[in-house]
Figure 1 (spheres, one colour):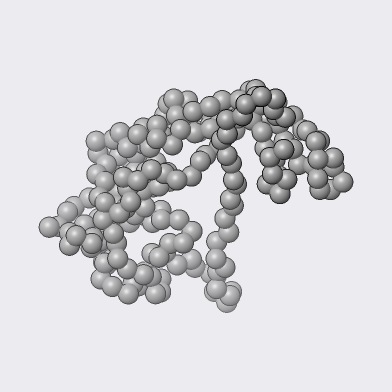
Figure 2: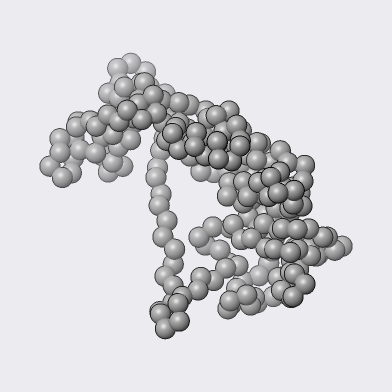
Length: 217
């Protein structure tokens, strides 16, 4: 079967799903969102500064407030134990913080009827710029064709790769005469949600950030 679409987005995480929603709802484009794990829960736990979340909601025209699971009016930072700071040194920031409800956010961004989700794989590996080790992606002057793992072919005007920093589909270009582009950097922050009985060291009205090397006290 050959399918026709304006934009094919490969990778159905938050970035790809948001892009699909905006293209469909704000630009009236027909979009395919391709990911073999599209129905799985998003694994990451997202925390946000309330001011930034509000600004993003206003810019995108989305009700992102409904996608917050928890809100804290202040944020306490414990980074003692290094740089000659006492372990119990607390820096309180008068900045509200929130925790995103991943299920509600995903439901909101999947609400467009103009986006079709295809739980299929694009089985290829980039070997040079726009050259792949299989015919799963083919480019021409008329557009591109994406061959899915079920045998369907998607003819599309544009392909967007949102599969992340370990992408098999995109090769990053370096300026002429420069060495190959390094692997992209990434940041990881760890968080946990616990139920505590009795006295507790941290203030319950505050979001608490601390140096992971200290552990919970």
